[in-house]
Image (cartoon, rainbow, N blue to C red; front, side, top):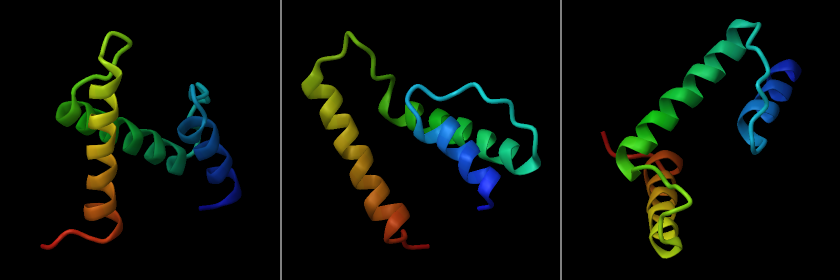
Length: 79
């Protein structure tokens, strides 16, 4: 990632809440699209985590997601 991509990524992905920085470059639009796609996929699997959710339930969902990321994305899932 180039320097401008790193700054955009930090502002729009790593910051909570994310900045509403406009995606001006193709790489920024790709980052924005990837975030939206991942967000939609995660919500479709976990359901929304909202303030009314039991904290124990929310922690369980987040731990399951973490384990999936570790096992499938970091280590690589079998083909």
